[in-house]
Length: 295
Image (cartoon, rainbow, N blue to C red; front, side):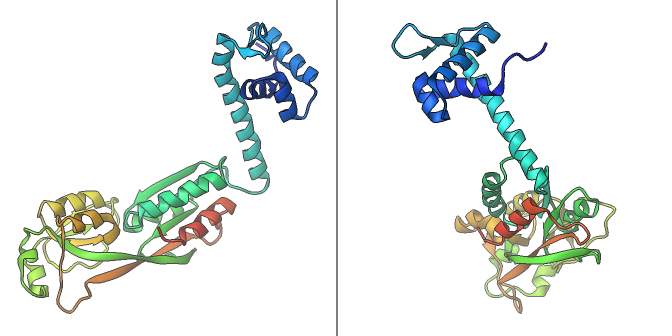
């Protein structure tokens, strides 16, 4: 069935409903009141539904008009989105932005940046993957993602990288764990006697990357929050990004381990990585620059 009404009629209907009268809608739209009345009358004729009750001094929405107003707003919003997206594409803005972040990167920082991104690029959907270690590079290398935010991982020669900032890393255990009960600095011998919980990549075909492994006995988990749950249960000791366990440290459910001949805190540098031959477009570049502001 052919559509019989126009976007102009729909926008005029919305303006009249929102401003309470045809005259107010005319002033808002910069049109003659007679033109507004005519557009709404034709919309009513073409839909076969009375949208306004004109029996009073000012027209009021009918029951049918109230129901159709939501549909009208959806149509107008979709048209605005189409126009905005097409305008962005003409300027080279990505139709969709796909990015990857290492699980160690603060998710709150990404969420705050994403909120600003939504305001800056309302017509550009964001797709975000969260991966572990070198797994964050794979979507970039496959061409599925524009860029990745990764930790200390070897970067292929055909990729470019830009530094962001460091994420604070601490060694922790549950307060009932044997290491947490040691008075004084904890030696490497103490560490080697206990199970170390180690974050590992999800792809079992990838070679294991040994970052900060100090115990010959390791349990490997491919999920940071599973590792956190194991730490809280006293099943081992291990490193965690401080921002991810701030509440647990504050309420005493986890304890920072003071290790001899090692700093209490370390910093994992975070970098943005993308293929040098296809750097991020305007939306991706905007988000990268926004991520430079720590949460």
